[in-house]
Amino acid sequence: MFFSIIIPLYNRPQEIDELLNTLTQQTYMQFEVLVIEDGSVNDAKAIVDKYTNLLDVKYFLKPNEGQGFARNYGFERAKGDYFVIFDSDCLIPKDYLEIVRDYLFEHKLDAYGGPDAAHQSFTPVQKAISYAMTSPFTTGGIRGNKKHVGQFHPRSFNMGVSREAWEKVGGFILTRLGEDIEYSIRIHENGFKIGLIPEAKVFHKRRTSFSQFYKQLHFFGRARINIYKHFPSELKLVHFFPAIFTCGVIFTILINIIYWPLAFVCNFLMLVYFMLIFFHSWQVNKSLKVAFLSIIAAFIQLFAYGLGFMQDLFKRVVLKQR
Image (cartoon, rainbow, N blue to C red; front, top):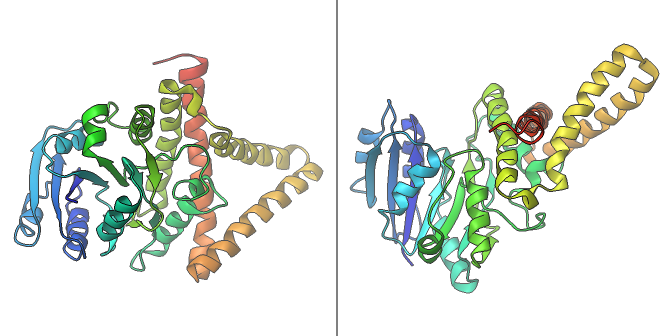
C-alpha cells in the first residue's frame, strides 16, 4: 500500500519542520509527502528542501483559498492508493503508517480517522488543551473515542481517504467551518465505509495559548451550525451541551448577584464538575499544574464553543442570514 500524505500549510514553517522530521522516522516508508503552501507570506520552501534527500517530498505554492481547497490541490497531484491528511501542527509517531497499513489490510475502510494525544514535549498549557479536547467530561471525548455518538466522522488533523472514495465523491466543497465533517458525511452517503483506527494517534499541538484556543473553539461552535445547514440530521443533542453550559455560567453569575441562596446550589454543582475534571486530569497527566490548567482549558472549550454555536444558531437559523 502506497500512501500520499497531504499537508496544507499557511505561515507555519516551524511546524512543518517538526512534522517532516517525525515522518523521516516512520517504520513503514512506502509514502510520499505533498506540502501545499496556501498563499503564505512566510513560506516554508527552504525548510521543505532540507528533507528532499530524506523523504519523497514535493512542495507546491498556490494562491490562498483555505485548508479544504489546499487539500483538494494535493489530492489532484497525489499518486497514492490512500490519501492521509495531517494538520501542520501534528507530530506523527514512528509506527503510525505501519499501524494504519496493518489495520486497513484486516478491516476494509474507505476512510478513517484517528485520535490525538499530548506529546511529552508539549507545554503544560498544550497538555491541558489536549486534555480538554479528549476528556470524557467535555465534548472532546467523542472525537477519538470507540464509543462515539452515531456515525463516526474523521477530523482533518488525522484523516485518511482511499483513492477510490475520492474518485467517486470528489474532494472538499467547503474550505473551512466544518469542512472535514461535511466531507465525511458525503463519503458515508455514497456507500463507503468509515471507521476509527484507535491506535493511529497523532500528537496534536492545537494552540499554544488560551486566547488562541478560545478563538479556535468559538470557530468550531460556528462550524457546527454550518454543518447543520447542509445536513440538518447531523445536529445531535450532545452538540447543545456547550451552549447549555454557557447559559448555565451566565445564569450562575446573574443569580449570585440577584438571589444568593439559589446561587449556592449552582456554585456547588459547578465546583463538583470542575473538581471531576481536576482529579481526572491529574490522574491522566500526573501533574498538578496541568490538572489546574485543565479546568481553565475545559471552561474555555465549552464556553467559547457554546458562544459560537449560539451566535450562528441565532444569525443563520433564527434570522436566516447567509
